[in-house]
Length: 113
Length: 108
Image (cartoon, rainbow over the protein chains, first blue to last red):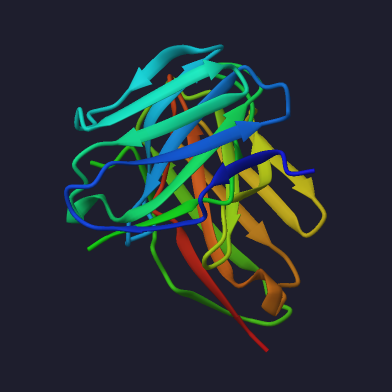
């Protein structure tokens, strides 16, 4: 069983489109995250949710909107996609806020043309 | 100054040798420290975590933490070609922050 699963694995779209990435974890963890990894492999946190509540919201454009319908799911919606949004987006979870290691999903490679 | 810094490498290591990776961090209040391995095109996977000063060993891996000097290191003994990957240091203060990673190449 996949612990943290995200879909789709690949996403190719044109500038200006709106797209969503879904994430689910079956580890029973309280906290979920979205990280962005750019072409230089630098992993940067975007959002963190603890039990459906937004905890961390880094300086991310308003075009990015996370939604957590329950503590096992954290989705990411991106409006008006730009070339600079091209990256790999990783969903992750940890047992609780501020503690324990992160467990990552397999990533979604977003390419904006 | 970046919050978590690593030498980007590549660190070239002969098979069977010891690979030594270093990581420095700026937040003195950081409490927990992690090493992740990331193969090309894959997601990061946890290989070690350490919370207290000193050494922690797990198989061929040893993590070393020195909070006074604000560095954490990872030693890989008996390096294998399968250890070739990017190693990410992560430090948790009020959030988990990653370094840019060190690329390791183990040559047969």
